[in-house]
Amino acid sequence: MTRQTLDFVLLGLMLAAIWLLLSGLFKPLLLVLGLLAVLLTLWLTGRMKILDAESHPVAAAFHYLPYWPWLVVEIVKSSIDVARRVLSPRMPISPTVFEVRASQRTAVGRVVLANSITLTPGTVTLDVDGDRLRVHALSRESVDYLLQGEMDRRVSRAEGQP
Image (cartoon, rainbow, N blue to C red; front, side):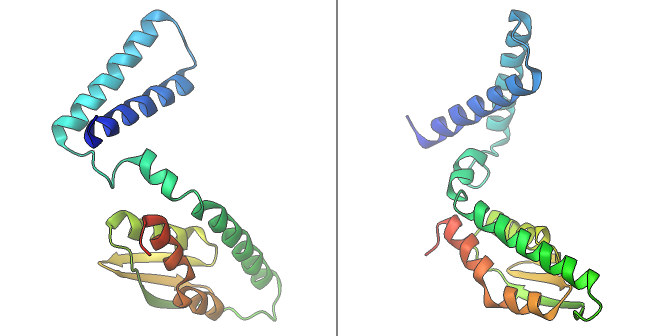
């Protein structure tokens, strides 16, 4: 079985599982209609030639499994920091716009980094231009943290880079 065939089979199984979970109906007519919808989607995907290594959500999800728990912890830590800054008048708030370099090779990797920055409270990715991300941060500590590159390294590692 070729890699492309395996990708189509996995995509078909994923689409069928999502369809079954969302519909929750197991009547013969609806199962046939669901199967036809999945087959039509697979046919359109093949005809448009949009299924490749970057776009396959199942394969990419497995690579990022170690990354998601780390990101959740970072989101919680940032949420606490932002709440403390908002509630305490002594905590400094120094909004800053700056650029950070993304070392990911693929567009998907850069998007994951940009979205991870945006998901972390106190920071928002404003623009992605090639390997440069323009970021707005609420505090200087957030700027320093992103410039250290830990998030960038973890996304690169999840993407398969050393």
